[in-house]
Image (cartoon, rainbow, N blue to C red; front, side):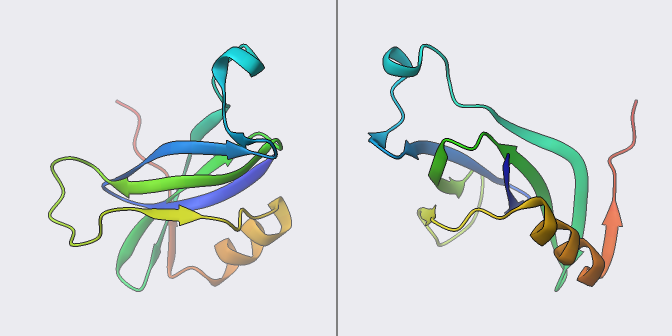
Amino acid sequence: MKYFFLSEGWTYGRVWEFGGLWGQTTWRKPPHIQRLNCGILQKGETLWLYEVEAAVIMLEVKPQANSQSNIGQVVLKRLITAEQVIKVLTEAEQIFQPQKT
């Protein structure tokens, strides 16, 4: 698995694997991308931890449609390992889990 942190109010779009854009017909499934039940507060910004399968090498991330961001989209080219996630968590201002309802 690989991981990334994504700001509150952002979502992912296109996904790339080694051969190019992820093709569901080739892989016969969508890429595994899941928001985990862990968030951090860093420099006043809420970031959520996501996991992706190892075959994913890049993701396009963008603000959700209702966001007021001036940024259109960004491509994440550096996904991180579990060890790097632990380092980020230890340096975070605050770690939290959403409350279950």
